[in-house]
Length: 396
Image (tube, rainbow, N blue to C red; front, side, top):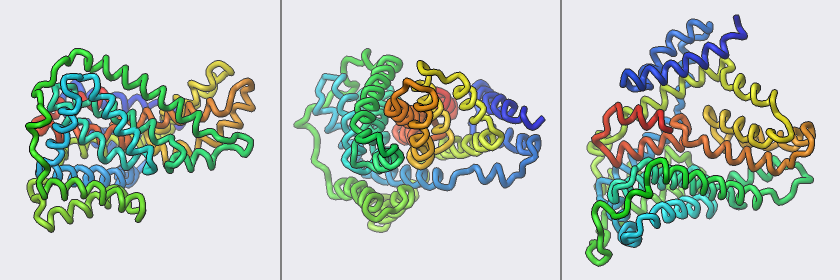
């Protein structure tokens, strides 16, 4: 029976997603309901279920959304978004390119993907709402940019990948950067067409550059608070969620924003959804559901399929773990061995596939990229219903 647990756990997980979607109930609440039953079927305990609730994800989600709720109160993000829109004029196709480049630059100048994820989704969602784009589209295009930028040679990702490379595989980062940039440009174009970005010819609210007011003192301070968060994160090595909490606290203490209003505006439905489904997926992982999918791929690896299958395996692992903390350190060192075993495969091609797969599935709602995309939408569109949230969850 033990061998069947991996299949049962995977099937039940899919049932949870489908039930929540069609019954229009918060998928996180359904996940916990099924989790209570599943731990008993599998001989686990409630501690296993509770232990799957990621305190790190909770801190990141609440910290970042609290900080950006405070910044939004001052009108700073709205004004910044309108200034960016005014730069683009009536050339709607320019905005996704600007958002992609912003993500690439913020991640690529050194911080890597995680700090950029604190900024890009929130800004992209507000720009999209202002001009009439689907906000999820622009958020995802911004995230594609930072996923490419994370592979410049000066990021934490580059340090891990270079360290994992075999001694005889030198200078891998330029190749991985080019591959990742090409992949994310293609995925951005896919999002552009799926979400019908090409059909938006005119901004909803055309903005003349000369008509926009200047940033006031509170708005400048709130925008500088983002810089302070990045300084704490990069130079003092403070956890991103904790840094965001601390900076938000300063904004409240100095009267720049109102803590009561900020706390009320947090997307609690999204936070419960992400944490609870992550907890259930942890049970699926413990039961071997994710390994089952990865092993099935590994068994059919050949010279022609090794590269895409490595990408897909990395993506599956990234659904339940951090690309930076788990996927890259675990899978990058395997690439040289697998290339040797399969024969006729370039190990750098496998590394580039792991890089892309590990990054791109980061838009899963159970990963930081997807979770912050949902949180950004909830902040930019405060009237979203639980049906809207469930739809976005399934789309991601």
